[in-house]
Amino acid sequence: MRKLSLTVLMSLGLLGCAIDRVDPLNVPLVYTPTSSATVLTGVLSCATIGPIEVTDGRRDKSLGLRTMETKPLKASVSTSSDATAWVRQGVDSYLSHNGIKVQGSGPKLALTLNQLLTTESVYHRASYTAVVSLTAELKSPGGKSCWQGTFDGKGGNYGYAGSIENYQETLNGALDAASVLLTSTQSFRDALCHCSD
Image (cartoon, rainbow, N blue to C red; front, side, top):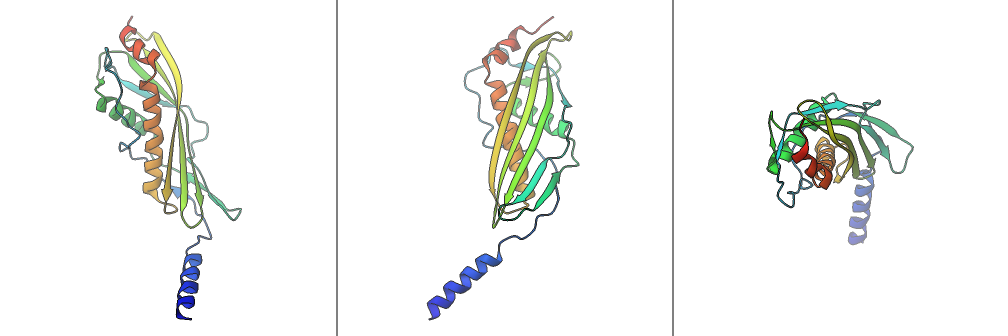
């Protein structure tokens, strides 16, 4: 009898942990490297990039939605942070970590942020996903376009619902994944050596 009561109490306790609402959330964008920021394979023969410039090409500046798995409840996710500064810091950090010098000389890396989107699916805990889509263009010091490509990085996470830390880890993972795709593209690597006036 005692064992049954304990099992029932534990079950009721677990049911009591289910979340019954989702509120809007504001997530500060703070870049820290993630495990997605893998080290480049192969040495770059030209490993210098000029300034990194980022523009925000998104029409919708919201970050996404929080949804309940079992109820038709939704809430918006936003940020008051400068998304372009976050992208610049993340890409700069990734490049520098991989031995690419980011300085005044060399081709300019112009990035356009096309998408910055999160989803959080909530029940007892929450699953998180994020997509960061960037269009990258290498430009010579005189402004000539040498190369262009678009990269979609994805991140995922799981943990407590409404966790700012989980959102940041997921977003940073997606940004790092986009940086990995950019720098592992052979045409980008080749263009670094030939992008001059």
